[in-house]
Image (tube, rainbow, N blue to C red; front, top):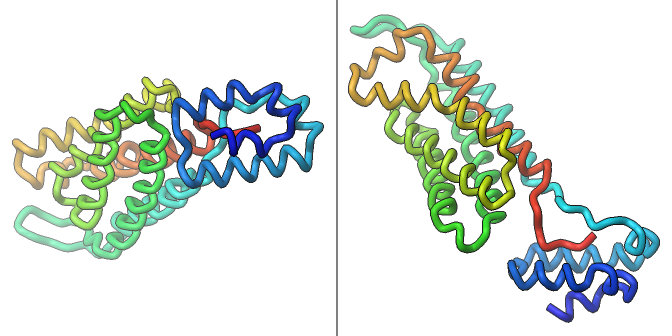
Length: 239
């Protein structure tokens, strides 16, 4: 780690060297972090007045936050396509054929998975339960996306997402307000889908609340994960 630290100007090392070394010791940097550290050292030498006078930022925005943001657009498109699909009829009444929405919902979950992965990467190594919850959410979401009628998988996805957010909140990388919004938003669909495990499968379709649940509640992870990543999480990175 001393090699990485030596890349910075002497004035910068005198002011931030000890703190930076402690951060590197607590969380060994990944290859991407090392590249960012080298880039930061170059910037510190090009702009020495900033390195010597500005305070070290506590958070660094993660550009991967744009992935779930784009996923939100795909998710909204899927909801619109599902809500405007051709009307079909069966023994239980009428419904909208949402087949055209499947590619968009799959894309939405792929982009959300990238954001969830970045949240997992920001967790401490000893946050085993939170990491497990995050990977569970990723796998369940990717499996559920091409089969949106599989409500048990949906429940696993939502519980895993909340578990990851709780672990990230304990680690200080997820703000309390985002955790509260996520829990409130996913409480209703989790309860409804859980009830669907014991009630006839078609009751949710005939209840008239499905579009609201899908758009306002299930769509919550996309903007929240994007907001948390773009807001920035603490990392062992230079000023």
